[in-house]
Amino acid sequence: MHNDSRTRYTRDSAANSAFDDVELGELDLEERHALRRVAGLSTELQDVTEVEYRQLRLERVVLVGVWTSGTAAEADNSLLELKLLAETAGSEVLDGLIQRRQSPDPATYIGSGKALELRDIVESTGADTVICDGELSPGQLRQLEEVVKVKVIDRTALILDIFAQHAKSREGKAQVELAQLQYLLPRLRGWGGNLSRQVGGRAAGGVGIGGRGPGETKIELDRRRIRERMAKLRRQISGMSTARETMRAHRAGREVPAVAIAGYTNAGKSSLLNRITGAGVLVEDALFATLDPTVRRARTPEGRLFTIADTVGFVRLLPTQLIEAFRSTLEEVADADLILHVVDGSHPDPEGQLSAVRQVFSEIDGALDVPEIVVINKADAADQEVIDRLTRSERDSIVVSARTGAGIDELMAMIERELPRLDHEVSMLVPYERGDLISRAHKEGEVLSVEHVGDGTILHARVLSSLFHELEQVAKPVERV
Image (cartoon, rainbow, N blue to C red; front, side, top):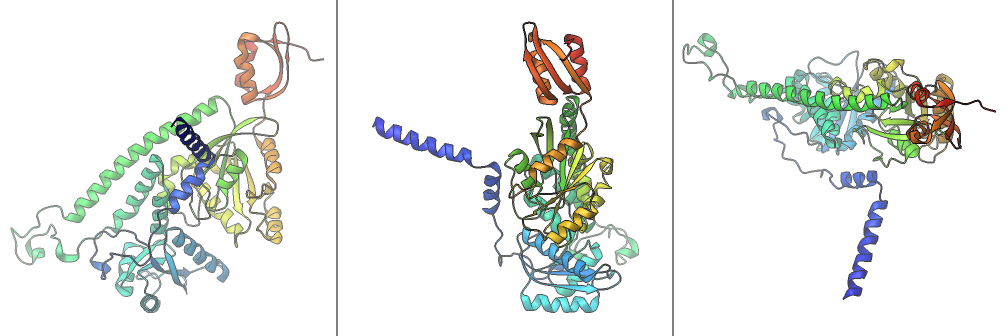
């Protein structure tokens, strides 16, 4: 009996040990893959114009884009990115078409003739959703739906849906909900003419007094509730951003340099963070796999401590609602001492990725003033000609592979050079009772040598101003031989 208990305990201990060895990111990835949308199962009404609230269930989709400027290759890359976004959201892409015109049609986005062609494609493929590569006005969405007879969504709604799927933290969920409500508010729909309106006299069909509606209509009530919910979310996010600012102020008070990893979605930011720090953050070959920022500690080759933060990925035409909602998160970039701007070297248009990220930087106060290292990632899968082109155009750049580890040592040395310099080199006798200052020198500075003598510890190090002033008060200078 006792032997059975010991055997069971040993087996359980081994299982727990194996569980502990699993990276947190791998568990997150397994949990995400455990829930997938099933194609072919839909409860959407046949006539989408009669739907008041429509849940975003992307299943079998057709993509459509408008090519207004640039080359044909750039237009194809844009539609390919839309395909990746749709697949990340859990849909099956059946077909896609591009309309060449000077500007999107104000009525149906792609023009009446192309809209009829799109309807034929939808009918032949059995699609239940059309996704447009741009942000459509409420009128464009409604009129295009009237032609194609299936649900139409735009690029912004698609990105918001992906963010809603991937948000995990309380702050991330609140930010995504706020962005979704900002997008939904001008696009609310009522039940056509079935709802009463606040009218009277001739406008009420000649009924006159007594012919008015009962007050607020259903859609007006919903708009008011959405505005109230948005105000509540803004207060919550403001409170959360205060906590984030307190943490940043604490790190700044200790004068620990901060590095932020930023870049296009799926460029390999989380993989790079894991490679540098062993953080175990979720890594997936999908757009916007991670939304919640992760801050970890790391050390330079010389032993200097710094923090490194993984931020939300950017994308071309990132919805303005998301930039506004995620502003407190994006401030990690502006408050950093150094930005690692990660770009996918194997992408068909890496220059476009760099440009799109810098466009978002321009909307964050102070982000363009932070020193930047362009990290050309996925060197193991990239074309050497593309890498050479990027290194020529980007002065402060380095080529790495987060998957294989190539170039990581050179990157760490580059980070060492670019971080703010330690201001003071000291050689002081520190009393033994102030061992906390020696510990801080190891954590925050660069210790060159330590020697223990009868009266205390002789510290030779490079330190920041705050620690230097404390050492001056309790330690005695010594001459180095």
